[in-house]
Amino acid sequence: MRLVFAGTPQTAVPALDALLTSRHEVVAVVTRPDKPAGRGQKVGSNPVAQRAAVEGLEVLAPARVRDPAFQDRLRQIAPDCCPMVAYGALIPQAALDIPPYGWVNLHFSVLPAWRGAAPVQHAILHGDDVTGASTFQVVAELDAGPVYGVLTEQVRPRDTSGDLLERLAYSGAELLVATLDGIQDGKLHAIPQPAEGVSFAPKITPADARVDWKLPALAVDRLIRACTPDPGAWTEYEGARLKLGPVSVADPATGPALAPGDLLAERHAVYAGTGSRPVRLGEVQAEGKRLMAASDWARGLRSDGPLRFG
Image (tube, rainbow, N blue to C red):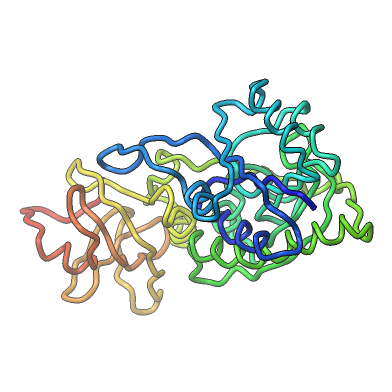
């Protein structure tokens, strides 16, 4: 099939790579417009646009997918199908109707669970043991189209969203190629999603990523892992933001007794109190500083009173 691939972040690149080496022909990509990023707010191409440039593919980056000029160009290219992974915008019906086989999305959950922008983060945040990926026919309603294929993936006890998403990006890429093969061969037909079991995974904002130390230790652990690497879990110490890497829950038999938010700095470990048992901090990053072990950060603190997160 003749394909126009839609995607934006690094997560989408394995799928683009897999399609480039498949029996299908990728003729162009659709991606989000360049925007400022990083501390210097420099404007740069996103990972999918960069990969497309290496391959000499046409890059379409409409500000809005409903723009007539974009849709006219898509009709001129005349793709048979538009596979998409983490594109980052809803596709209007007029654009959905252009390719004969429609738009096929690779979504990182077992639908109908965790429809939305952050399925992997919410799977970890809510303590799911198993998640996965689904390919489905895109419809106007968010992630509600009929499903072509599914794979499952175990959520490991220490997985961050970055760890889990990386595994799903590669296994999902294979699923996407297999889905397009099956569609072209006429052997694969989409099945409507069940009405039961629908859940939603809205984007996790930096405000959502602030740790509430009154929560139980397991909830604190899940929040931090779900927000690693993006948007990054954080707390406050003496009025300044402190970024937190993954923590470990202390053994109730040997861990210290601490009130929520209280800190205990030992020579090689730093503990923070929660609503249940303490957690041992991993790496932390103070504003304007490099990422470092929590014990190294604590050695540089100067305080006349007890150590405590705000």
